[in-house]
Amino acid sequence: MANQIGVERWTVALLGAATVAAIVAPVAGRTHAWLGVLAALVAFSGAPWAAHALPSALDGVLARRRVASMLWLALALVGVLQMGRLSMFMADATREWGATVPDPAATHHACMSAYVYAAELSERRVANVYAADWYPIFDPPGPTCRLVATSVQGLAPWASDAYEYPPPFLLLPRLALAVTSSFTAIRAWWFVIQALALIGAGVLFARWVGGAAGLTLGLLLPAVLASLETMFGLQFGQFHAMAMMLALGGMVAVASRRTALAGALLAAAILSKMSPAILLVALAARRDWRALGWTAVWGAIYAGVGLAVLGPQPYVAFVTYQLPRLANGAAFAFTHTGAHPVFLASRNFSIAGIAHKLELLGAPGQAIAVASALPWIYSIALLVAAAWVARRERPRADDALLWLALLDLAALRSPEAPSFYALAPVLWLLALLATRLRGRRPAIAALAVSWVLVVGPPPLPDRVDLIVNLACQAFVFVLCAVVVWRVGAARERAPKARAIRAATATI
Image 1 (cartoon, rainbow, N blue to C red):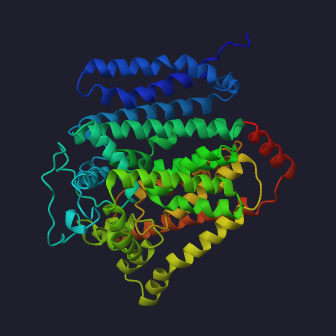
Image 2 (image 1 turned 45 degrees about the vertical axis):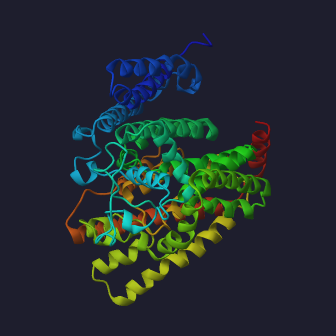
Image 3 (image 1 turned 180 degrees about the horizontal axis):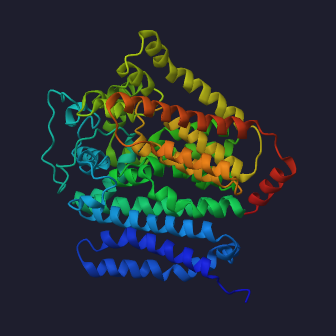
């Protein structure tokens, strides 16, 4: 009887397998239906193992908390359906009913097209893969703008976004191009890899948190997956959520004394999105030189491999051309002049986006000038906060909250942080906060409202849209800042914290 698996664990395991099958099967069956069936069978074959691995605390929960169990079941089914229909769209872009939302501006957009396009440019040894002249999205385009007669099948209709990432990131799309010259296949399998990686990272993170908090976090994964920000990120092929999870995994590895792995994960995150470098400040304040050293080693390895494969041109262009344009906002000038400048401005949750919102709302010049100075004030405050919170030992769940809040705040320092995908990691923060509710109805209601505010409203009339999203943006900043302040200022529960650190050192 001790090894008997309850219906609850079987249900969770089967729904997890169904989610994986819903993600993989439509893409695997894109060319041959039998491959989709095989993928689904493989996904479900792991259900018995998953049922055994799930915590026995789930057994009997249906009888103890019937309403909550039914609500979770409905949520998990929604997650399966959302992932299934999105996978159908990623396998075949003509199935627009499967897109996150049926807006043509969204269904015809793929951020990852810039990754593939820039990778092809680098293959052709173009001197500056960042040059605005190469990207039609700049309006008006550069004087020599030309979308190359690409050899990547199906890329041309999607290519528009400019490539904004550091050079080593090009190794990923270059690897994809080495496998296939079909953008349709790259787009579909990029979705599968990212979706499965996010689920895997979420499960491992929940297991690391452990206890009731880890179980609750794991059970909320369907809510994160089915939310618009996560789905948009997966649909667009954006690497943002993956970079945040790599950084989070790096800090988990630091806490578990796996510093070589920590360095590999942190370096990968920083060399893709740069904003996770805020965690290096925390490590320096903690005087964790070993973790910093491994991060430097892996960063040098990634950069060296990139230099060998890509050549020096992308590195020179990034330092001399792209970094200044990122600093002054020119790299994202297309968001001010495109087809929907007000909508894009309202959805830019970057600290730098506040000034643009106020300008469009007709705010006085003094208010706009003050808002324009906020990014540098914000940067200094963020660095101080990262150093301050790193000085104490805390339980795992507290550490996780701080890392997520710092990562979210750092990501919003970028000149452009579209809420469509930039807020997906904030949902992970809310899911972690949900582990502390303990059934308190007012707190649950507050969390539900917070979730709605982070997800954001549908498109509204221009002025209303700007005002509402400015309020939502302020809420996100306040939420993350309060988490940093409250958790960072909390007194250390010394015996418990030390016991946890001692236990993790032996793992």
